[in-house]
Length: 354
Ligand code: GGG
Image 1 (cartoon, rainbow, N blue to C red):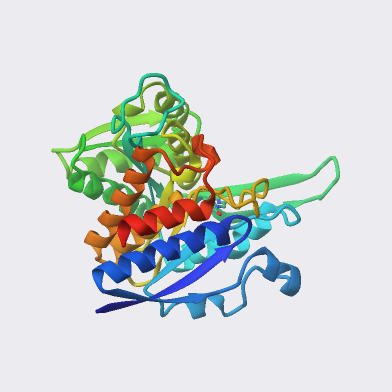
Image 2 (image 1 turned 180 degrees about the vertical axis):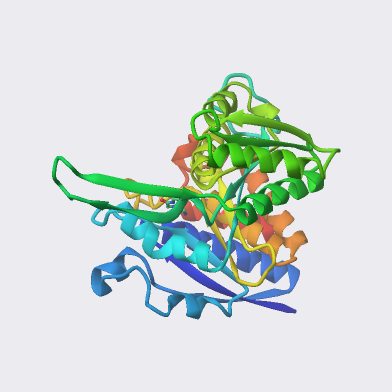
């Protein structure tokens, strides 16, 4: 029997609803594969902020450090500005734990109708490798002359050789392991941003030379966005900066059917710190408490967590159960055209796994 200690931060909005289903499915998988999970819930997020004036305790990161992994729900609340919630919880975890890879896979599953015409199941199968600790999210900047006509605001994007090289190298290593097209597409905006993004393009070309068997492409972010809609089949691994990776992965989630199907892992590949797994979607205040949120992104994130923990068989079983549920089409949440509740979908996937 293998045991894992998992820190759970369900967070805001629909976070607790979808995380509960993820835990249900993990427990079913644990039962089947002789794995035990020791879940510790940290009630941090916007409710904590309302009481304490901060999103997590001062020693919160310290408290997370001993865990094997972090299972995260969502962050965001209508009463608190998004930059407060994001910078108070998610970003310190990603940065402090050097989770420099944000892995966001998107597959067009059988049973899912892409908003794009005539797309077959499996024809879209790509993964966005988003740089997760620097770039546009570095949090360097400031302002003066607040709320005057002379107001100045500056936000600096930081691209280091260390940070750029390691994320690009990760993308190539991933393309080597994937069964698909073995292609890495780098996305920048080097026509306009002639310092950092020309630098990124140069590092991409340098690293690419180490992987001659992998096809490469280099696109401007506007062209990449257009091609993700026009011809998403052409992509395999996409590597991009923090901001561009975030935007491109939302487009990829939509063309494969729903944000409710998009999982992610914030990964420290060296395993010096715990990695965090969460659905790509946010807190969705418009549907919070209605019991209709799609739990599949959270459940697929739990599968990514199992993969990271070395439990590939259990991870594969969960993915198969999600695929079966989608292909059967009986129990789908409203975002996929169904009428099932969050817990009905979770129950079905847990049943198929167990
Ligand atoms: N589960 C992901 C989540 O809650 N995301 C909230 C958000 O605003 N994320 C912004 C980002 O990841 O850049």
